[in-house]
Length: 98
Image (cartoon, rainbow, N blue to C red; front, side):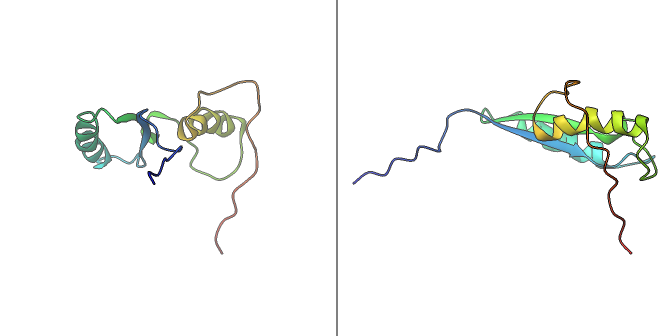
């Protein structure tokens, strides 16, 4: 009896590549460019890049209006959605390890 899988799709897979360093002399963009070159050779993948160096992120964990706005712009990209001004971002402070 043939098995049918209703979860299989012919649609390309959307993959978000996060370059997670913003320090001077970082190597992440070199790795990202290498990986993107290989991903773009495939028809079944659609790459999207989020580079933290392109966003003015805070250096402290204190929730400020500027930090909240910067994170609100980045978070939807990581979740695969477009930024929206209709819903305010969460302003909870992450806990720090002891």
